[in-house]
Image 1 (tube, rainbow, N blue to C red):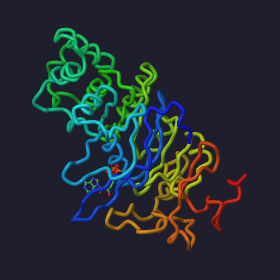
Image 2: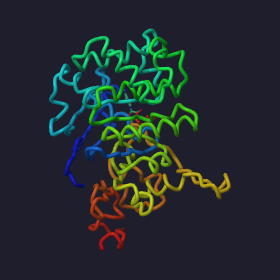
Image 3: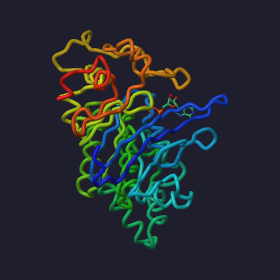
Length: 337
Ligand SMILES: Nc1ncnc2c1ncn2[C@@H]1O[C@H](COP(=O)(O)OP(=O)(O)OP(=O)(O)O)[C@@H](O)[C@H]1O
């Protein structure tokens, strides 16, 4: 995959957890880039390692059992793992911001919205308290909160879920970061509010020229938002490409299955395809071979023995599947062209 203009470059990332004295990798050899101003959607079912990957980028893994064991996370060419805690503190919020699924967990319930928004600006700029408050009110207006002069005096519980997410977005963009990581930002919201929040993220991304890494399990969101798509399964990237090719020419059986499980308007409910089985837990991950093998409708006997490698089938389109490895017997002819 092209590394030109990569703002964020993840190389062979391995993030592990110590569980009962043994190290298990929730992210195992993940590599991909996010270019400046690019929207990259990371998709996969629950438990595929999407959140662990974003916490690795932010260096926010649980200290008691989580660690980056291998690989690089280069932001503007610098490995974030090499930064001290105080250097990383200045990156968070200023260069890279993150918004989460449930804003209530990220907002402090006993502090006013204004106080929390001011804090972000005070931490990362030299502006005075008065200048900061003015900016906070403007930021709330920018994210579509009309009564922002009053809202700064209110507490998180006084706002609706959608409003709280708007506040989180205001905090995340306060210092105009180059990269916004949004981890399932709309999952906890009802459908109409979801659409408004996504539209807001898209608008801000456009206006500010920010890159966005959007984590979701919703392919409808991907179609709406993505330039590039990274499909993750059980801690690994199984396919990545631009959004058109993922939707019109998916290669990996997992990607095809995810696409097959999107409800269509003309389809009866009982016809809706679901992927059988579940993502294996860390302790139950296959020790060798393809991690999707037990759920794969196209599995071959060798899939249980050989670890598939992520390889390009066409320029800019990479797949981790023996069906597409030219040295393997079950390879698909069309991708060798
Ligand atoms: N602190 C932890 N200790 C042990 N295992 C963990 C920890 N955090 C996550 N895991 C495991 O790592 C794997 C990946 O989890 P992760 O939360 O990244 O998945 P996800 O794709 O983001 O799912 P979701 O969409 O539900 O957030 C899972 O098997 C999960 O149980």
